[in-house]
Image 1: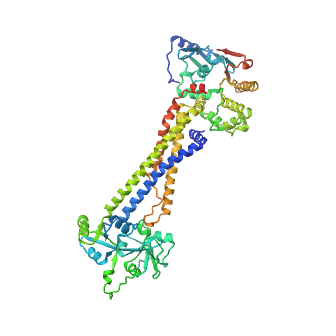
Image 2: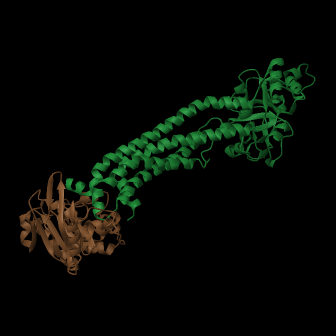
Image 3: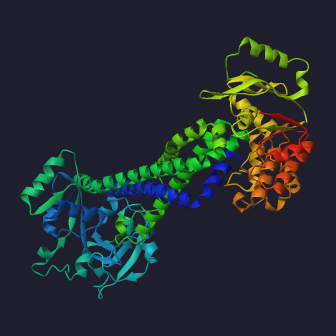
Length: 396
Length: 235
């Protein structure tokens, strides 16, 4: 019978106390792990999706909303901009690449994005199956769309008006899937890509040159801009905002602003998690300290049987380490489970996080639980180490 | 073996140690010289003991006479104010702390007034613990043998809370004799028992110490057990 099994048996003897203390530790670790996983994944998604995009130009309104709707596809667009204005801007010598986006429809919550090959090049998208769209109402779908909706090349579906609901279905024109993208780990996995013309036609704007005002009717939602040179960072947005009816929003600036807004909540939750961890350490200390009074005779009997002071010390320390390590491991796994559950019921598939995302930093929480165990046990263990066997046995 | 414990040795004590290491010393299992202890201003002095291997002794005395203090000194859990304790040829309080713990686990068995087993462990596990702390290999056969002998084998997987007072006392005796100690001590083993049970416990201790070749020292104020012993110290 080794020291670990003696400590384990002692923990099992007081099951309710053991369970409550494990729960406290698991709760604290779980909150911290959830925050770590959530904020890291969100940060990666923000960074990964905005990679290569220096500026987004769209209708005037909230710049954050423009960024969220045009890069991350998780908010409503600020409005539309005229195609002619957008084309003029794209011809500016400071612009290396301009990617047009036309939003407005969805399929089962997955956004249908009208664009051209420049979007494919921007994200370096590759096909897993089929071909890119050539004609109107031909679409290429992201890997997650195909997986979730069990779609394959050649399938047809009707899009719905709006960005999340499937109530207002476009009955007239069916979209045909011509290709499925390879998984890329960004928002494109959750998109349905098609030509801008398809979006216009879906909404009754025909590319009819005989119609006198057909060009003026043509609008897009936004333009993703890549600068030719870093020198344009200051000048170009200023020019757009001052001399056009459009607004320019910088993804880097707006992401940082978004993070600072979310950061307040994340910071609060982090401190809440830390306080829960401290409370659990105090709870374990108090439990152990109180139970030690009852267990002193047990420990004295062990000494009479030949146990050294160090063994008695280790039995107490091990009890706490086992308890807090189990608690923190459960907490880490519980955080993954909760994150997965939250993501499962999440409305917006574009911003979906994953519970199957593991980080080396999670081991720090397990190590933290281990350290809390040692800290909570050290005083009671020293008390047990120093106890006078003769006095304890005489007191009975 | 070097000792971590150090205390002043007067010339007389050094003489006593030298005497106890004389060629006749090894015929005694337990020898004490000039043992004393004090609680505040109250000083307790104990008679010198010379107990041979396999002998069965009774240490008698009223409450407060120092029986428990003497027993705690003899089992190595209370360092005396003065004097020496030899078990065989080992001077007990010259051993290091760790050495003393090991020596106690391997050579001394103790039955206390309260039959106390570790509550979170079964009877069998309590006995495993005695083997573990003494540094012996786990010997389930020996445990079965001793529990059968004490007629509590049917309780080997029970927790102490499921045992009667008599069964608890027998389990604690089993634990004390499990490692076949050279010295078996019992502190007031009959004080809370009726005549029948007191008799049974004393007979058991005598029988087990005989069977294992252990020297038995029972400390008590209970006159009922006097007849069972031919040798006694009175404090």
